[in-house]
Image 1 (cartoon, rainbow, N blue to C red):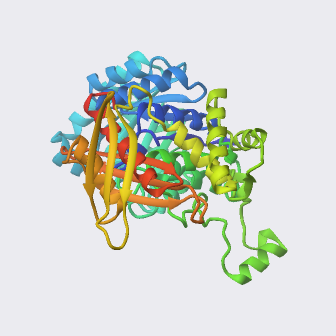
Image 2 (image 1 turned 120 degrees about the vertical axis):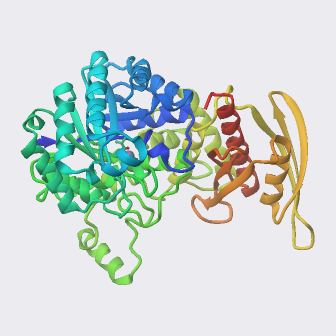
Image 3 (image 1 turned 135 degrees about the vertical axis):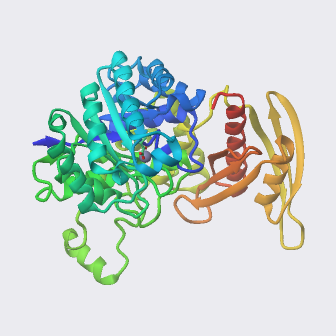
Length: 510
Ligand code: KIV
Ligand code: ZN
């Protein structure tokens, strides 16, 4: 049996998705969940890129045990030094270093010759190796690199000490057959490749990242780099859940291969990542989309009722799909909430559990019935809550006037590090008016770039989940979310959370 190593880069390449900025605390929570999911490697960030990234990688290395903790660095000495400073706290550290090898990247981006790039790769691996025995090297834009030159760089990196070679399709250009051929050629042309791990890292620009990664497995790759929900640069990365469920569901096709993923943690992880990054999962997304197990056509429903296997190739329970079934009524006790949290696999302390119980009870009092989805939303909201230090601005009070015969107006009271301020705003609707009132108090240059509203379980008394993206004057984008039974309050909370993220970023705390 051959284990396929699952290298998760949600916190590095995934966080590079436009607008997906996570706080250090949110990254730590996701890393803990990834460990529970059973990933083998967590690429926790790119430490040289910002102080916030450095701190996040460091705290993950200190606190998350189990998976290998990896940090990314360009093939530059200072990058590697900084990465080591952050990951050295892990009992299983890995340095991942990369340099672009394709002609277009060498000539237009790096302005370096083939020999210079080859030397950079060798020197970088040697330097990384002086700190850490586990070193990964990637020839960036490998899929568009001349194969013989790519193999020279791969050979050089292995001889310098790389223990994993990752072949990235950086721009999502490859087709499955040609990508598989490239991997086979690595084994044929570089004999040393048999002694180390060959990995792949595929982007989804042409929608082929999962197909390319699966084809690479058949060609001998044993590590797949992927992200939860497939988030990442541009169209994203190879989706973790899709690769894992292909290997598991098509056992006879992927005979002899397995992963260490606890598939029951897939759905809770997907929910957590989508809520904390503010990137919604498309409804029809394979495995974790809301419609992935919904049967609409009468003929399908009839088939599924007679025998699930007629139209379902996977059991939703296999991926931990909790469904939207009613769990808590007005009179259900605390044990019911605890049971659901346990079932969902959240690792919470007693204080957190009692805060969730309190919120669920409040909701049950108003809404009468609370669904599992509500509990997931309340829990993720609590996990993503900013720390005292990060909560520079606090929302104190919101008043709105709206209707068909008046211009919507809002009055908002906030405190900024204890100092009370009140602002007014007008808008096209109550939410617009609230956003103008809030921005006028902090910085009128902040722009609301994206606004999404979702009723968690449906009905006019449902919990509203608002996700937003705001942009500051310098063009930095921050995402945040808020939940409340009142749409205006959920919006105001999300806006204030986004502002806090931008202020913390400005202060270098990200
Ligand atoms: O897409 C890419 O090439 C990368 C490398 C840093 C591995 O993300
Ligand atoms: Zn990438």
